[in-house]
Length: 167
Image (cartoon, rainbow, N blue to C red; front, side):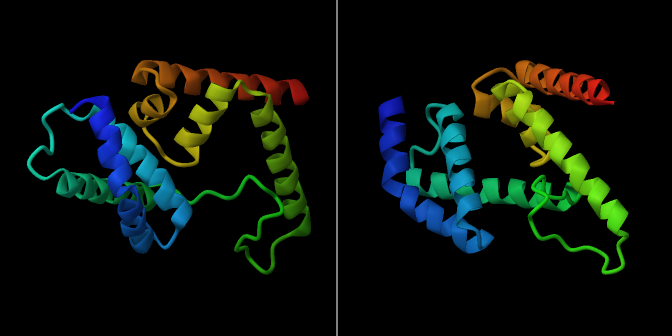
């Protein structure tokens, strides 16, 4: 299929795909993200893929995106929000000093992340917070898997340097 045909196919079924994913995720935002990822994967698919039943092919791809999402959710450790104002579950007997220190660390990390170059910040956030692989990050950024790995490594090095300079 040509790029124009792929785009037309995706646009024709995008609403149904979003509804399909949103029903299974109970989160329209995640559904939208997975639909965008599906579109990128569709563009990478072999030219003859899904020719017999393009709609069924799209929904099979959507199902695989959902499965990958659930696997990442179940295998990734729980992460806390980088926003100190977000409500979080915590021990009701938590030490106030610990909570204050944690909020300070989150603020510092947030300030450091803002100072990173855009691609490095995105790559690091997607890798550490969303559990994406280097290949997935590369696709999102439009670069090779190896370059995505370099962005992550550079971001980690810059974060470490910036943290050490704060001390």
